[in-house]
Length: 390
Ligand code: PLP
Image (tube, rainbow, N blue to C red; front, side):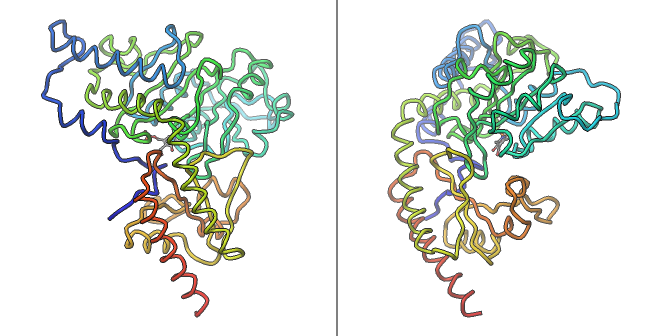
């Protein structure tokens, strides 16, 4: 048996998606074609857009653009915003920043913004403790600010940011600043209200909620002007040319429909799993430190440090026991570097390297939970007692 407690990386396609794949008989073709097979494909796109609109409360005049995933959606939103200017020496005064993001964003947000900063725009990466303080905004924001990017929930710690409140604070000071939200880790886990949040753009990804990998979407507010990022045909409101991946988009629509239908019951499943794990971790007392950043966290994510034990060792031992989890480090060219998210929260590199992330699939079953928790207890108690003996 193998269980996926690394759901923030990817969730297995839900059964409804697998069933629709099994039933697919090649009936739909290019959605831009006028014949019946083309129109069948167009209906798939329409149905999936409707499912997304219902899940995220997107209104008719706003656009939902299908993409290859959240990395593309984030890049499209962020690189679209401003013409790069010639390099100018930054004054060091945060009030004239042209780009602001939290320092705990995913690299799919950080890197496009850093790309713009290398071209001369002044970027401010703000630590999460400051991002959540209302008083910070009058100091950070001026009319110069083109983009403000903040994730709805963090992929490593599960910290939830109050996007609705923060968007209002920003727009009150600088109405023309474009607010972008990477909602990858929030969709299907907490309620999202695109209309109420009043962000300009919102990105999310299919494979984090049980659709196929390689599909996602960018939601664009009717008040936000976007330039195309793929030039060619008229697909996707002329913003993203190219024939759509109809089968993957179908899976996204199904996953969104199921996520909405099961939002409450999935929340109970994830919260229950989290509760059981936290109660075991509490029993371990001083041997572990559970990270709890911000006022609210997603119901499926636990970030915990096993003191004195390398996260990579735990990941391997658990993998051998049939449990997939991840370490709080990103492996770049074979050399794991400590997570920038944990470092932004003030942890040392050593502490970050001892931190693991456990993240449950929204539809986690009783059997998976029982098996996974049993294996987790067995492996961690063995490793802890080996350490005591050493
Ligand atoms: N943003 C966040 C917060 C993520 O967790 C991820 C994936 O881990 C991404 C963006 C990138 O998503 P995708 O794999 O769809 O490109």
